[in-house]
Amino acid sequence: MDFGLSDEERAIRDTARDFITREVMPLEQELLRRERAHQPGLEPSELRELQLKARKFGFWGLATPQEYGGMDLPAVVQSLIWTEIGRSFVPFRFGGEADNILFHATDEQRKEFLLPTIEGERNSCFAITEPGAGSDAANIRFSARRDGDDWILNGEKTFITGGNEADFAIVIAVTDPERGARDGGATAFLVDRAMGWRSEFIPTMGEGGPASLIFDDVRVPHRNILGEVGQGFALAMQWIGKGRYTIPSHAVGIAERALRMAIDHANTRETFGSKIGTNQAIQWMIADSETELEAARWLILRAAWTVDAGLDPRHASSMAKLYGAGMVNRVVDRVMQIHGGMGYTRELPIERWYRQVRLYRIFEGTDEMQRLIISRDLLRGYTKLGGHLG
Image (tube, rainbow, N blue to C red; front, side, top):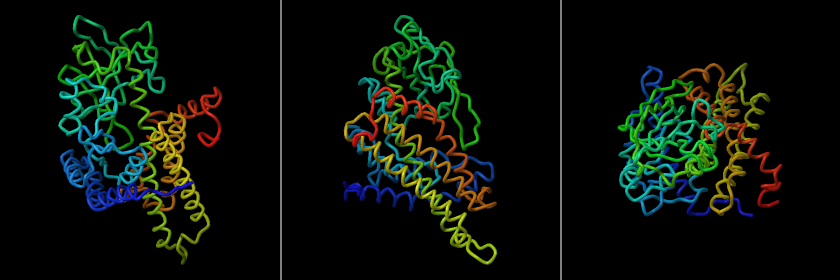
């Protein structure tokens, strides 16, 4: 059994690491300075400039098919790159991406929505969560009513990432209340902001914030349906599933960077005439963090491997998401403790991570939902103990 990376995987990973180190990390102190001054972090134009620089490195569209100018990388390599991105707290991601379900677009929709999104000329958001339907996504009530060649959309979506910046939304709406969302009663629509919906900023404990999207008799042409009528819930689950291994991959990068800071601090900070790294309490926090970090790494890479192997990734991805999200919360908490009072200040990024990673246990499927999926798979015999090696 080979746990090593191929030469190609290592080369791509190392190139991504070099870019993050040389181009992204130098912006960290300016980002912290602006946030301490209660100013916005990096402007969209600054982040866009980074993406264009990365494009010259050959990094464009990690998951985008080659026919659209992307790299179409295997899931394992994407996971490795997301870990490198996580090493910096600058909110950077490589460009050339579009929501995975947007590739179900028609030829006309590709020209209007998909291609401009890949090129960074348009911003999208995915909208399924509602005030009364979070983890229970099948309970959505947002409605779409047929009116001739159009559909009339009404309702509210909430906690929508990127909803404040988006100029169009992929909206999952109930088109057949009798069937219900899960059983073919929901449909996905591509809805331009210019069609009449508005967004409202939701302040959170993290940097930036999601949005509520308000639709009041928004008229959408039938040609703006993404996929088929009744396919909305299936597309939504496909969209959500992708985050189950990319989110914890990002968490691994955060945990590695934070733990490195803790180790360096433990080797230089002195109390009572000795380095604090000589204290057993500090040593145990570092040891526990490294052990959990390594366990999370292999759970996540295995989840990505199942995608590349053409296996059903849902069980492995749920375990990766559950453990990876918990791991990074515990590691960052320990790192803050090791740094003491300085870790609690905004001079260092630790408190920023502390607030950021708490979200990882909630979005794209809460801890509780991951536990439900994992236990249900075992109790109903959908999977077996030991996975593919069992």
